[in-house]
Image (cartoon, rainbow, N blue to C red; front, top):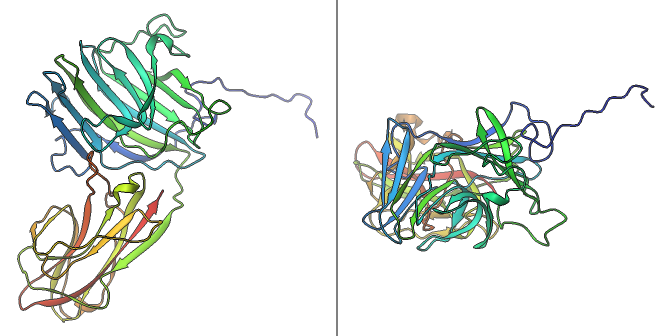
Length: 410
């Protein structure tokens, strides 16, 4: 069949299309977003932070809804990074928006983007994509296993954004900028970097890899958001404002579901204060890019007695340290079963809790946890822990069984 007056529409290679050359529509799936309206997350639930040096400071500014980060002398640094790494789904455009101020100051390096470092000081970048102002030049960077592909602003291949490019836009880095990154990974896809100015996304540089490279351009597409400032001898500051991660065209998780239980031997709990831990999971340090989503829990007592149950994030446990065991070689999870004396001395951040009592205490209803945070790692590679805990209302000791289910995406 042929059409006499066939009209073909071709869209310009611009912000109107996503990383896979599809026309953008207003249905991105938000994987993560963070506004800093009230605090800088001092409990380190979402953001981890490391500082080095007495002049390395970080403080929240409610008026500016931002975290101010500053350094005062050589080798000082402040780094803020999400504990979670955001799962990339092959075949879809991964989109990052990040806002901040990285003004030029001599001998001070400022960066923000989607990247991570090694787990030991000085935490140099290892994998990811970021914008950098090193005190002399502004650049866009892709780093793979510590090897950096750095492109100075004067060499950006779409628009140098210094007033001499096609848009005639002259970026002023002493002012707040909206930095945008989208990429098709598949190991060898394209990365586009740009800025949103007056509500319009303008791309300034493309990193093209397909038909050019012989291996992947970065070792993982599952990346955290990160802001950092480092002194190379100078004094300076930057602002960490707002960020979002989106999967364009929706997200269809295709991972695996797993579960673990305390086994057939009950755990005796006598503490009526904060109660005691029963069952915990954490992310393996070797599987930092795996997304772990707690999904459900089940808890019963074999005694017909009332109790409180709760799920807590990074508590402090007393008694004998439980042993962490790999769930499976293919899994990113380790689990631990309490040993019967793990009183919760620091309750951590309670994510979900409830009561069970009387004749219903032994029914063991499944509670959904789908709204809970994903498990992550600190900058130094320390894993978050998630524990199911039980607190009897009265003595004597009660016997408990528990199970915990999760989904994981690699």
